[in-house]
Length: 558
View 1 (spheres, rainbow, N blue to C red):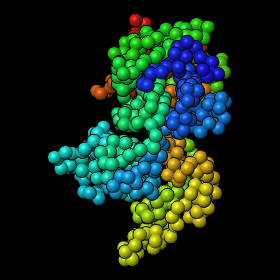
View 2 (cartoon, rainbow, N blue to C red):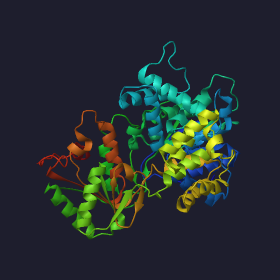
View 3 (cartoon, rainbow, N blue to C red):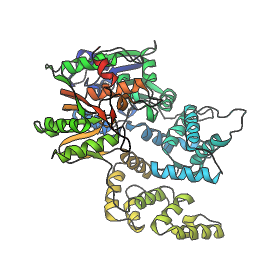
View 4 (cartoon, rainbow, N blue to C red):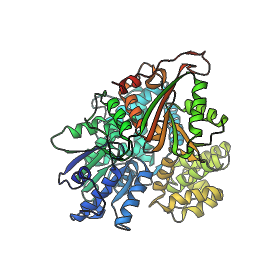
């Protein structure tokens, strides 16, 4: 057994001999501890560290697991620990050459570049439809990854654009986030004579499995595994808008082929907070029944406060926070617009704010990313023209295109002459030659030093840009979604009204909105305050209108 201290629930999960195990881990139940202990248990039983693959939802979560493992076994050579995109990219880099038409000079486009490139591609094909149609076709194609597409039917319209876009990624080597997973599944499920992908079956561990998208589940099902150990909580599935689907974890828990374990002990929240959370979430139909049982030894408190107006609510909120340590307080709201509104109001009352905001980058950061992309795949003309356009201007890019066409050679061979085979170690010197500034080079070097290839570094940088950062000290004011994985002594849930949460729009997912409130409630350790106003402006252009308390207030009391 490992040296990591475990309770009985955790120990039962960690020591299971089942080939497939799903752990339903409630809030504050120690899932990271369980994942780390499971790795050590596998090694104790004789598993090679190189066979262990740990998939996390974020790079930060991977860093936390590695840090825990490093305490027990320093410098242990795991097979992989990181995001699914990172693992799929690794497989494509190592084995993608076995796919027909595949180029191993892979580059990863961040969301901004990928969106612009896709729009240009659709326009070049003469597509006249809507972005919604393209998105629907993309989701449909992703859900059928690795299977024959459009059998007996010639794709038309949006289907044609999306299908050819994914094929174009394969031949050019320029992948967006969806393309990495799509072709990763295609590699694993190929009916051609592709063998030993990966070279040996793995011991798979998956964190935050409740947010697994359909294509993630396809990937895990196709991956040759010795064992599967999946940790998640369907009650905390809040990223449906990103494709997350808790039905996969629920399906594992209900399958006779999987052993199911529940972690119900909550080492974060007081018992009164746990009780409110339990009462709320039992109204959900799509879940694995479980409780959140406080192991903290204290009760905590839950309060509600509804006042005449939004301005009055903000004043009461500020007065309440003023009597506490603001660094141990969080104000969690449903939308970014409300976050901005309440942060400004609190600042007007001289409350210090620790805000979540996008990462700040140097002015030439886009040039740096284009240069890295070009170094990874210098034979991609579109990438080289993008680089030239940023380094000089659009006219220079047009002249480069014309010169390459006249010479019947690639843009790089005629105009830039970047060498092939640039490595993460040598890339910074080439960035300087490509007129990238020292500040951007320093940021790029941080990713390059952590990466085996430039493509890995591009993926890491693209993923970092999807994550906001906290700046300054004071009370945290952020969305409920951004609070996932965090905790505070006191949590405020203002603007807790029906029009805001769950909201009144036509396609609102009540189940997911309830799960979002469950997540927000269980961020509180000692004190939870839900508040709202009796009247509020629905938006900045509307007039003040009566506001109704959220239905979840009633559910917490029933």
